[in-house]
Length: 549
Image 1 (cartoon, rainbow, N blue to C red):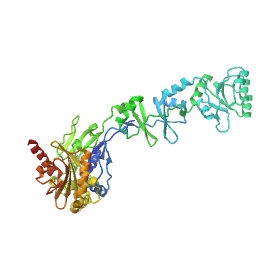
Image 2 (image 1 turned 180 degrees about the vertical axis):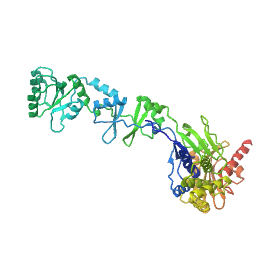
Image 3 (image 1 turned 90 degrees about the horizontal axis):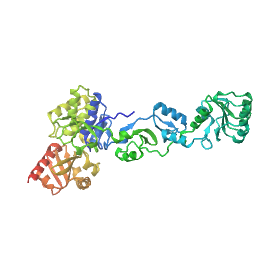
Image 4 (image 1 turned 180 degrees about the horizontal axis):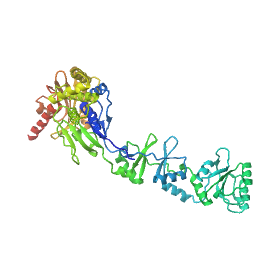
């Protein structure tokens, strides 16, 4: 049975508090409305967000580094296996009952050891048209008895291993004496007792009397004296002989060179191997254990991962591999960024300061109760995105919703808000790489590819102490990722200004946008708190002006 795949609610790469909380809270809404939605994230959680999650005792969302189709996305739950110690008759019974043509083989610890198919069984019979030999198969008498549906007439001690040949006593007494060897298994029909006695006296391992034939008392007594097992089989001699061939363990015929895959492998990477071997199903193994099967048919045309994008709508900001996924909804508060879909989808784009303001509205309008923890996360996102209502992106509706959520969450907005912002406003313990990638978003401004990151501080001395190393790492990241311009926006929450550190060309675009000297790769902008309203729009307008000139 194919596993049901969830829909993932996911924010942008390098997520901020709104991106993470929006994914969790929208997943909660959709789940309450009966949809299988899981919250996910496309990057590392920052300190501010972690404070909010810990404060309200919420788990972080699942990390999805990409949404390219993987083996686990088309995994079929598969409980049908056979132990390598089981025999061919048991295998045939399973194949007939379940209508399968191949079965994974496991050992006693459930480790995958091979795979056996109908073709392996057929090959066994084509290669071994004669009678069975047990010289190297280590078959126990109990296995033979079980396969041929026999009952014991004379039992041996324990369950001895048979090492001889399987023979049919069909000739004269002399012929039997000459051909039957010690340790053999002999099939005999309704023959005179002398034939049976001759076999026993040759120290055979087991005498099988087929067709429920009569067994003389002298035969039973002699068998006990020579410690020879005697079995009575209901089948005729021909059928019994063929059944004995089926007591061979699966380990003797299975394929041990198994073509299998790991659940995390990309479907794109395994298609060539599937096309080469042409099997219908392949085992999926994790830590040596069989966890399912993958169908070559499904792997070639996989079902797309379904996504709900929250807090972004631009492909450059979305999780890696979004072009291979199916976007079914977008919930956002930013400008439209040009994502195209193959079919109509539900979108909600409200001009408010935070995605979670929209999601709180949707809870109310759909009459879905908001638990205190969910209210606390949505409140945290609003505080973060509006910088405790100081950002120009903040609307009256954001404030109204924040107070409504604070009552449900049971917190004081000012007290909790300052604790939250303080938790995310210390860059002293952040590496330069973490600073330049914190809440980083990509933008196409004019003909130029920009990255703009943002960090908050409460102490302005932190930037002064680390300016040079941040600029160096910013240049390293810009060159490595191929941006034309990379900017880090360090926002002082208490004094309400931002310092922009930047790397790349053209500096003329930044000079035109902010009317500041860019020689030091650093400018300070009083009153600037919002990347969305106070940084990106001036840069876009400057690109138009310079492009026109």
